[in-house]
Length: 296
Ligand code: SF4
Ligand code: SF4
Image (cartoon, rainbow, N blue to C red; front, side, top):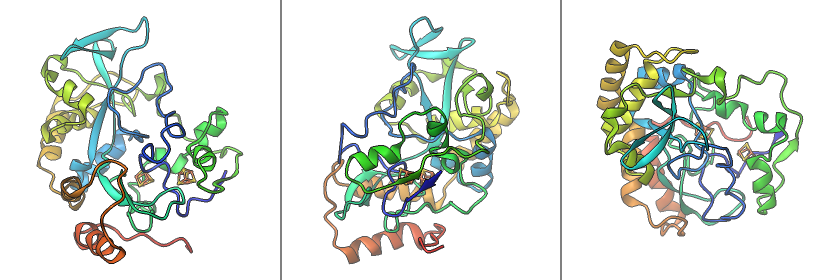
């Protein structure tokens, strides 16, 4: 597998406003996500705990799923949810606030939902060389290549975003996929108290989660045991509290970007100097790790 990622960020931003037809295939599975976040990268339980340990409990968000035909389900807020043994199934991913970015080879920065860790200027990941770099991101698009499924890189190419996938042999050391029976308690979790989710399910669907909603699911993921449905109640409560209390540079940046953003996909009304100053102010000077540049 060999990629040319410079100037792309196709798998880190929601570029559907640029090419709706090209970027619509991240939800082709039998159990569609309830929310409309594009390309949410599922985190492992250990990664959830790692972010919590670093005080970054406010960068994560849950995803619930619609049931497939014949699936067990539970109905909350008038919405049917896929369940595992009666408990709503969910994954945890990274939040995507709107940022002024110019991805997939475009040169005009637009307000597009972007991973909290994407540097809007360099279009590089701020945690790429870090232990916290999510496994899903480091392996991408290896699983697609192994399954002969279309990759985001090819969608970017088809949308005129330049040559991206230079070698399509999947890596030999691919980690276990994020979905499937082996993922239970590791990347796919089961929320143990469905009765507590009234209101939260509708907010997740509508993209309006509260910090308490997000912390509730982060806690349940951190309290999960890989390979099992059981959740350690003490670890769940402690992790929920830590997520709820987190106040990181990244969480503050999400609030700031969300408050300043123009409409989805609209060209950002910022000249180059203003954009650079804003990114420095909201991210770099606030504690965000720098990106290494493409030469390295
Ligand atoms: S963690 Fe990094 S590579 Fe993964 S989606 Fe976010 S910016 Fe992209
Ligand atoms: S879509 Fe492919 S080429 Fe573009 S940044 Fe992601 S992995 Fe790299």
